[in-house]
Structures are given as structure tokens and as C-alpha cells.
Image 1: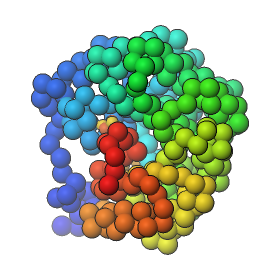
Image 2: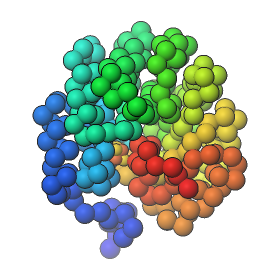
Image 3: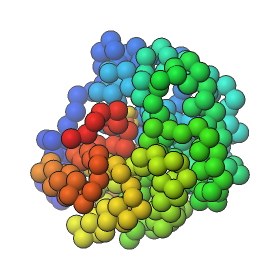
Length: 288
Ligand code: SF4
């Protein structure tokens, strides 16, 4: 067998059953019926079977067309539509029907909007809270690169339970994986969020398997602690579409355990690190 075939063949620990079952179909039917976008489907997440069977999904607001062109992501790139005013109500209905108590909300990057979409994030939270007052929100936001202060001022009026923004990879790989983004800009957002959002816990995620070195990972984790980031998720990068970057390496479960311990040692209060960890994966659980 040649080397390329070897790389395409998934190691045993990365094999998962196809999504199926009554609970899965129920979640899928509700999402489809309400016209809700999820990152679960748009990013081809390998955890969909498990999460949807448990009635959990991560909603993708502000459309499914992104203004960036990140090579690790399978979300469509192009010119998005204006924010849909019916979306907050539809998300609220989904949360009510699925009896969700912890909702992760993310969005495409909206460089076309003067507030990066922050007001729409707030509108969704406010509308859902009217129906489910004790719901907790975890936001996974874009870098708001042209409007960080403005976006945080808007969100400060409707605080989430956790504020997340993903660094995704080490700075050296930004030019191939996240070409429209800047490592320092992303760190700045996490630092500013800590200061501007009344000490709301902050969270970030990175993917492994894109060719990063251990020293580079340590530097990223150290940078995150420097900006007082509290929570960390580390998972395996899996090529989500034909056009996406190839996987350079499959990281072993033992190495993910190593990173979990390391991250705890340097001060993260909440850590998830495993092949299938994604920023929203089991986000509601108290990690370790
Ligand atoms: S890990 Fe997150 S994105 Fe993946 S299926 Fe679960 S909720 Fe959706």
C-alpha cells in the first residue's frame, strides 16, 4: 500500500458509526423543519450522531455563507445575506422543543457587517431567554477583526455563560489554514473579552494534525494563559471536504491525554482534549 493510501485510511480510534436512531431523527427533523443552520452539518462534524442523539446541536447563525476562506473549514465562502430577523425566534423554538439548557451558538465570519454580527448574537440570546430564562449560552464568535470593541460593548449588555473564540492552530500555520485572520488579533479579542465582559469565562480551541510541533502548541497554550483564557478544547483536525487541507498527522489518544494534563498544569480550569473534541463537544459538561 502506498503512503497516500495509508494517510487516507483512518486509524481505528477515529472510526465512528453513521448517525441514526429515533432521537437522532427527532433532532434532525426539528432542525430541518425550523430551517436552522448548524455547524454540525456545515462543518461535517464527526460527532453529529452522538450529539444529535442526545438532543444537542450547535446553531450556526447569520447564514451559512462565510466572508472568509479558511482552508480547514468546509463552510461555503461568498457574499452572505443580511441577518434574518426571524432567526432569533426560530432558534428559541428549537431550544424549547429540544429542552436545551445549555446552548452553543456560533456564526460564520461576517466582515461585511459593521458590528461583525454581534447585535444578532445578542438578539438571539435575548429572544431565547424570554422563553427559557435559565438557559446558559456559550458563544463561539468570529474574531470581529474590524470592530472588536464595538462587538464586545454590544455583548456586554447580554452576557453569555462562556465566551469562546478559537485560535484554531499555531501562528506559523495561519497563512495556509486561516489566511484572512491574524493570530494576535484573535488573542486580543480573548484578552479584551475577559476585561469587558465582567469576567465571563473565556474559551478557545485548537486542532492538532496540521503539522504543528509540540513547542508551537506549548507556545499557543502559554499565550492563551497570558490573556487569562480559562477553558481549552483540543481535537484532531479531520479534512471536512475535498477542497480542505490534508491531514498531516493523526495524533494518538495518549498524546491528547498528555495535552490535557499539560493544559491543567499551566492553569486552564476546564480542559477537553481528545481526537473527537470540538469546541462545542460536550461543552455543557464539567470537564475533569
Ligand atoms: S461537537 Fe459540536 S458541532 Fe459537532 S455535532 Fe456536537 S454540537 Fe455539533
